[in-house]
Length: 122
Image 1 (cartoon, rainbow, N blue to C red):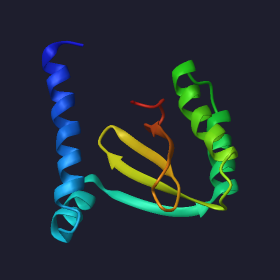
Image 2: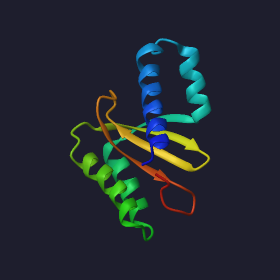
Image 3: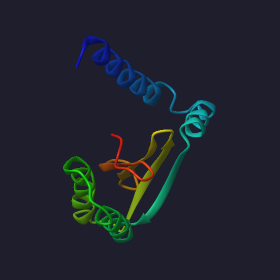
Image 4: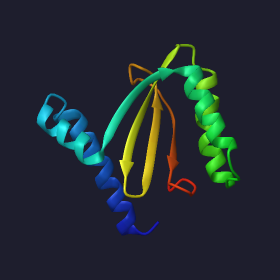
């Protein structure tokens, strides 16, 4: 990674940290981010989430990297003891990015990226 890319990544991480710490209570800023990112969150049964993405994983040939994305989420979901999980959905130009977490958002199981008719973009 070149220095410019490294700096860019550091700045994004830093900004996200600032937003989390400083702007938690600012509903206007949070709503603006949710709208601009086309963010949705869905509470779903753990077993249903597992089955939906297991089916999606098996539908077509995928690269090893993309299979690892799916498998890491599926593995984490299969060991989760609670009945519900959250799926955080970000719709972007590149496609769809899904993060799986506990209902209290204390644990992240992993993510899956999806692009229509293609593999993940992350």
